Image (cartoon, rainbow, N blue to C red; front, side, top):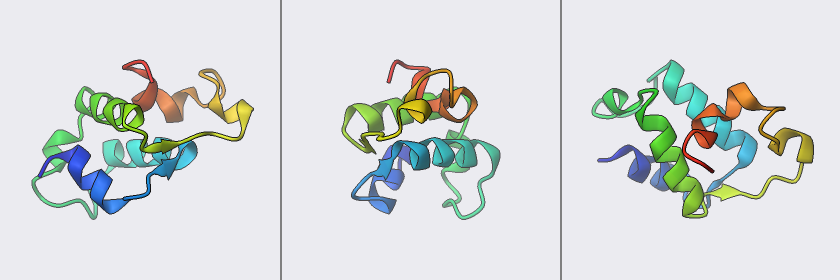
Length: 86
């Protein structure tokens, strides 16, 4: 199973911007609760690609908090999403 498929199945209705950023960070920091074949895919190079594809496919729900949606305000939390041009 691919990471993008796993995330899409786990959250079929998508996630908010903030929840998506937190999920990306969590997957980078720990593999607790993730199927055994996926932690090797939770790298600093792969996570941005996966989350960018998810965002382009409509997984990330629109952010309703302008401050948290800027590249500057949530930069550490949103690095996964922004690296590939979300």
